Image (cartoon, rainbow, N blue to C red):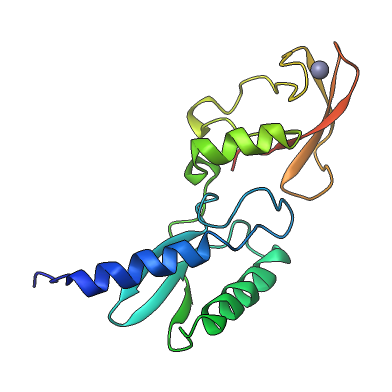
Length: 161
Ligand SMILES: [Zn+2]
């Protein structure tokens, strides 16, 4: 069966995507949930927002779902369902290049692509790769704490996942 997508369906999808771009990540407010790759798809029939949580059991997941619900309801899309899709699992490879630039500007070393996950951490302040792992757990479990041996500043690195 070939699904037919009408113009109005596409319009609805882009409207919803625009709204979801206004939902920030609760832990890193400079990036939104679409850029992070949490929003997988928006369906017009049945009306569903498909999301994949970043880390299973991450306390932010519940909060993100709640924020999406509020954003949809506020804009009259209360019939839109939010569906969690756990497989395939979320990967940091889904974070857009634009979001990685924002993470770096925010002082977080963005994750490398999983293909080169052994790449040295790079200091977001001075771009030095002369860095040292301090702790596997930074300010949140999805980040590791590093220190830069050149500018001597500590920084968070978003773990490749
Ligand atoms: Zn540095």
